[in-house]
Image (cartoon, rainbow, N blue to C red; front, side, top):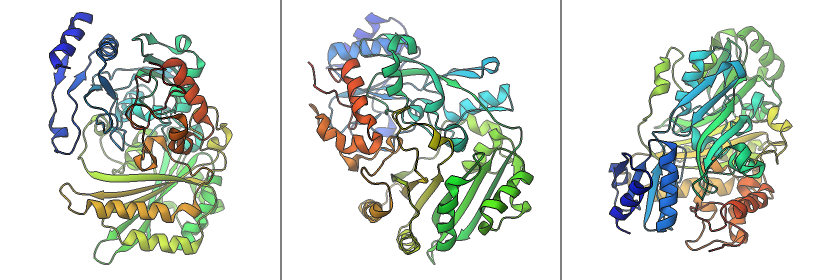
Length: 483
């Protein structure tokens, strides 16, 4: 299809100025599948026009709302050609209403921008989403979305109270118009399957004026790490802890663990909590720093506590190449396996493993409340990374390392199914075919992401998009494709 046809069709539907870009620098690598066109709408009506146009002309569309897609299925395609990208970066307005503890946020806004706008209005309001300020709100919430308020308030998707979406017919629907089934599906069922999310209405949560943080790094001690597993999900609900494992001495290949903590309250109270529940970490009063909730997000990034809040408004970060995978752990990993884990970490150039504690609110929300099911009984989420610089000739070696590590961890993580996190999409779990993928084929990865909720997602998909217009390598398939 000529681009002029697409452009003319859009102009006839909505004769205003559009931004159209062809194959920008981010797609310059020869092996990267390139879109025919990137369309950046300036209003919600432009999105409607784009959907209608793409459907009428039968050209495949990918939807990108800003920086939360590990496999890049929001802006590249390995199963569709030609295709275009609908980039929602310009839809980024944020309206905070402290009077009713809510905010409307368009999907092109970043988490950093959202946090900044909340903090402008109140020091005692927050939102339980992620720690990376450049992540787009749209994609983050569609997969669940977690951060340092996880154990107190649950996921970002758990705190959504309304939404606006463009459906396959080009209609703008709110919660009442879309119905509860579709509203359920878009809050954790993954992006790119049901329509184009335009904006979320979120519920703001209470945070104290004083938040206490700590970060202490030690050489990996398997006994201490085993003890963390025993207590992390049982700590005070106001405290979230993480463990970050990496190689810090590249010549001697020393593996360290950094224990981070984020507490909704003052340092004196946190001293008591840690002495009662996790004295083995050996922290003293000088290890704790009191700050604000908004500043604690910068600390988690991680940045110094005195970093200017304007950093949250920056939308670009240095690009890097990486591969990531995730697991959910329900029983402590034994010490001998932790020692093997240490050995494997030491063998990779730039690895990172992050364990994020669950428990408390995550135990109380039923796994069918939203599509995200990895809740009660999950002790922590394990996230594996390997990073490499652009131009590295050992990409295959890095990929082999993380796949080998993932295979090694199989006996120690969740089973039947082995869980995965859709916001850390992993195409190694399987992909859809170009023409269609049966529900049985898709369930191989779908059940890992959604467990028993996968079948309900298929039912919703069949009702709202039976022709599978909104699709990508791991989108939810309809039960029977109707064309």
